[in-house]
Image (cartoon, rainbow, N blue to C red; front, side, top):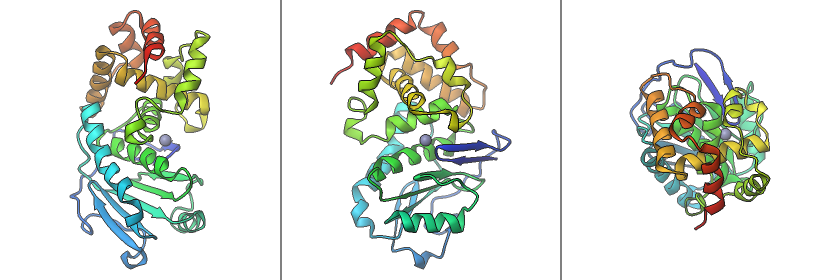
Amino acid sequence: MILSIGKFRILLAMALATMALATIGLTAGVRSSRAEGAWADTRIAEPFVCRADFSLTQADQLLEELAQLQVDLTRRLGIRPAREPIELYLFANEAAYRRFLKEQLPEVPYRRALYVKDGGPGRVFAYRSRQFEADVRHECTHALLHAVLPVVPLWLDEGLAKYFEVAPGRRAFDNPYLGGLRWSLYFGKVPSLSRLEKLGEINSMGHAEYRDAWAWVHFLLHGSPEARQELVGFLADIQARTPPDLMSQRLARRIPDLSKRFHAHFRHWKR
Ligand SMILES: [Zn+2]
């Protein structure tokens, strides 16, 4: 069982546990964490079943983006679309969000937004903070990945979530990490992928680790056709439950001048 709690992930046991598949439906197969009538609005943007304590007309664009996020992930990563529903719970303010979590998930450490998977459908919780839309895209990326992959290495999970949390039009070129990464590369430091691969606990990831994980994901998606093929192959292995080699080893075999290529990618990357 994997209990995956947003940026605080605990691997309890049986990482390769079979995940139950359920048919999308407003009520069938969907556990609601409180009575349906208690929510102000409910929408389906497959595979997401969204419940909110405010009117979702205010979140129409975000919900459209989430349906597109599923399409983007399957196209860019070659993974299957989620066949199980993902429940999304949205709150108008932090007080209501905190109250709900205290009542429904008292054992889960508090975070501004959460992704929880504990045997049933994945559940995402968020409130309308200043980072609301990025938080929802971030946690929903985790949810979509974990709906179809039995495991996702922490660096890749967070790197992809950081990449896809940015609004679609700004993802490739305007990520806030880009400036800092370029500055660090100016001094010649290519972030160590092998070091990231050794991180197993979300608490071992700080700003630099999130940035470096994002940077490797960016290189894998945009750096070269070979890098992209390795990413797709790596995820295909995981999806087929074939243990993949470490990404650092795959890339070293495939791209002998990897550090040089990583540098060149970010030096020349522009719209
Ligand atoms: Zn995350």
